[in-house]
Length: 507
RNA sequence: GCGCCCUUAGCUCAGUCGGUAGAGCAUCUGACUUUUAAUCAGGUGGUCGUUGGUUCGAAUCCAACAGGGCGCACCA
Image: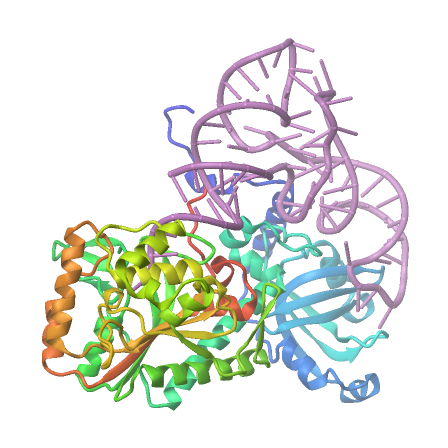
């Protein structure tokens, strides 16, 4: 390294130049000299998928008689030259269509250009007649073939595609070009979100947007990302949940609201955690947690049926049945079921529960009450064994600072979580709409924060003021979209269902 | 944060005991008028993640670093 700055800093990112790229740059240079190298005057009139859907079943004679002229555009994915005729596959958003390229139809000059100047990966526009080849594949007999965009970099190998995990995440565009399974996964993700919107819209919910940058990060227990607003010279937090804003809207009279958007949590990464992830949160006045469970069960069952075509969801070699009624168990019942040697007395008494937990090697902190210890017991011994969709209810009040107390047992709340395949998918409850109780719970959270719990909640005085105006009896829920998509697409890692998962910078 | 594993051609991967770099696809040259992982013949292509160390000699052994994967921890 000299002390001179690099003369071509913009080129630093392209240090992986090689002969393949150099050849293509030469072709692009020639194109520039001939005129417009990146034309934008080609218009297609159909996509590959429509052709297959409308004409895939016609036989060769019918198509010949039809003589349908079509214009398609897309990426050149393959080329098989057989002398004076050749075949390619063109890929667009809807799928692939075969091109039949014959010198006698296209002309000698363009045919030579197709063989010599075009490269796999180039974007082309094609005009020709639809027909079926000897082997019965729907194809286009090319009469015009135009290069629309030169690709300077070669595509990954045609058979194996791109398999390197890091490259697939960092260069998602390449993954999407060459790996059909990736395209299918993200298509399914879109369909799931579309389905949820349609489902909630049809039931009278309003889709809203609430702040992503919050003065007080509320609605969950998690470490937030912190940022700074220059003009106001103040600290802001990226939201960890939209919950408290959505409930303010219920106070305001928007009695059914939902939001599908990102949350940000400053925590570890794993196959189930990304710093930014997508949640559906929805709230409905004059409903309780039982109604939310019913809605969730109905929504997921219909979703599986509509998106996957079956209510039997296959995941990593297991099958989870969304068709049968979801089992409902309390936290306490779940602990006892998966720890058959325990008795009710073992989990109802703080000292006995603590000794049971310690016997299982579960680390406990001194200040924890019975509720927290029970939840630890549940999470360490039961959660990962809940395979078919299962609602766990009656979470202790101690660990549910925003949930309504149960009328007959104030030790627990009217709250549930949904588990599938041992993983939490959703969390919902009857909302705490008693402003004085909520204020007390916030005070307890603040005490825990002062005692060193980084994830304890702040006291949100405006939220209390909103509740003091009266929030109707309400129930609400959050659904982790990424984990749901993982389940529905048989994806092992959350990164497989995020178009651009968080990665450390290269180099 | 901890543990184990991975990093070789544009892509997918081999590389033995430490002896100086291989294949397939892509690419280039040629043949071929219905192929579809086309076929056939012949070529080009490498800072073996980076930096040190051990050694006569390192893709190979050791260390540190970087990136990634899996698991744990964290994440109600």
